[in-house]
Length: 167
Image (cartoon, rainbow, N blue to C red):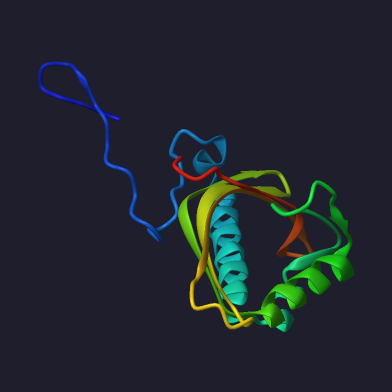
């Protein structure tokens, strides 16, 4: 927020789709020397996750997933537990769609010790291989939790919820 010359609070315009990720100056992590590098590394890991999803690159995605990962996807009330289950789901989505495009919307990052948190909305476009001519589009609210292990950020938890149409 910024203030106008008359003292009123002016709302800043929202970021555009795919805009660079914000690092909040009010975040305690911003004020610590090494934590800024952790934020940059967390952001880079997140960008690698998005790139792997968009290219449907299972090998690249696999390097970013912790063995004990838990995934709550938007299509099921039950979690997928473990790296193998998440990779199987990734593979199924990749093979049943001609294309998959994930576009982050205003992702935010926070580092607390060796835990990294990313929260955002994203636009998800899928073009099924089943011959339908229309893309399937969803807006999703997501939280990704990373743990820093041996200097690398790995996803340990992921939760996605579809937003109802019209929101």
